[in-house]
Length: 325
Image (cartoon, rainbow, N blue to C red; front, side, top):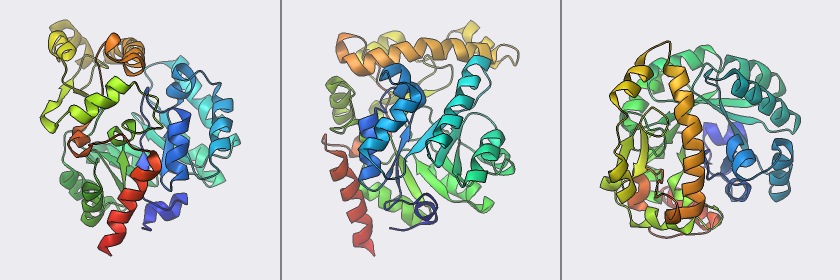
């Protein structure tokens, strides 16, 4: 089960529970790490959704597991106030001895410069080679390759295309998207990925505090039920097609699309959409169909048939790979 990724971060199974707003509750994050993979803290989920002071939330997770846990940092400069908080979260995480970071939506050089001197590992979310090259110049250790089967903010390329494009850069690659069954996990490793990032599979777990309606929607959905909408954050997001989504529609209006493309207004529009979606996704994920059936998920739903404890999920994935040796 050892890969360049597992050796770098000190885990047993090359599985990441990706950061998910609003579904990354502390118990889920800790359970994945305790089972041998690595859970990733999503700061807004920890603070805004679950109500923890960031430092105290990290200490709570540490009481649940002593194994490695990662931190997700979205570093886009759409809001100076938010970016200041990201800097504070990084400082606190380093002080609390967290040593794996996943960055997204920006150049991660400042994260690398502050994390590397204390021995931390930094991976960056990418959807194509040009973003990977910029992150490589910034000094990252590897890439989370977000493909066109992912939930949330999906990419446009297949797992095979990303491996072909980004593999020559010489860093470990994590396959993110479409992995909900041990067979697809084993296939990703056979292809040459150093690990896999799962999100949807872990929402349908006992430890995730998402509403049962959300988990049931994942079990009931098939691959063709996953659609893209740009009405959540201004960029395409993968969600389960439900009656609410069909009524709402999946495309931003003409004016919104113009403002999202304009260099002078796109960051403000993204911020507007994000603030709006932060509330909607929190309510929908925790309250279920009594609010709005607005559920993020990836095409991995096709391989998910039961709500299981995290330990069972990780063990089944690990056994599949071990049986191939």
